[in-house]
Length: 478
Image (tube, rainbow, N blue to C red; front, side, top):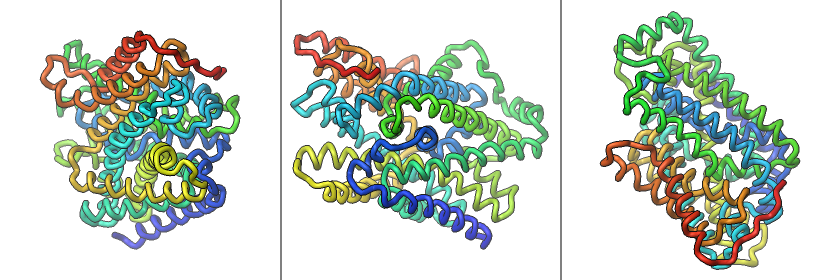
């Protein structure tokens, strides 16, 4: 690694450490650590929700789909934009009010209170499914960190994931929710500048969009959003656009809505966050387009096109600075996911089943011990590396979205769903999404697991709620 790269990386993380230190002393209780005392302003809420969402997926996995499959893969971005827009519109204000009135810090406790579940089964189902899918999600982030560490320091993948884990842990251990929010704000602005500027610069080097289009045509890659009207194309479009459904069930994103101080400022957060997302996804799409021309005739790992272009065209200092943006995106998402899992360990397991009289200090200690355990498990999965970053993220994203999305939507808007329906929604959505990638491949139509999980979850919720049981009454969230 060049000395200038080392200097740029050290400088970057010194700035991040200063941001983290600024907010460290504000996390004095478990509630502060897990929810920031519900004190965030609209800028923090917006950038925290979006920056913790995209991860290294924005720089590595998504551009790779454009590079390999052409513009039909851009339906993923369209689906995400539509999904997140409705997430802000339908979920954000209501979940903020509801969780405060129920005094809930996690999905588990919210669903339990909302459906008057004294049995604890909703809490157990929610916690177990979250643990399963989030551990896979976090491992995907560690895979990305391993790749970036290798590009930055020239180390092996195995050593890279270890270094990445060591960088990640202090983020969450030091300050929790509020610290991560401030770091997300800084890193979100930084990574947007990087993801927008790189394809603009690279486009001039390859000769513009016309050259990229010609290169794509020569490689048999379509630049059309609808390449043809075959069944295969429509299934691919549905599978890509269905990603947007996942937003309704992602705890690490939904919890960002819970932390805003004033509900009436949610609209401001929405405008800021959606603008950030639109620019970032357009730019990430452009990375894939530029790469088609830049790497024409060359073979390489598609998920490394951004990193390879940067290392080929920029000075050492800029290489270190730019690749820090990839680190930032990955660490933002993974740290938020670790924090969500930690809240499950603390609130849903330790506090509810082991020590109901636990003090704030003991809960904070358990939270931080939980972070270490979760990180180690995810590190083992990343070491095995069972699939690509894109496939790992897709699997976890689909599982979480299908497990919790339908129930969350209905819980905020309907009085008709009952406790047994909530149980069925969580289990059927999660199980369907988990097994569909393995069972669905034998069917004529390769429909996405998140879509099938959503359908299964809604069906189970409605059918099981027909059984006679006292109905839970939702609180007013307007």
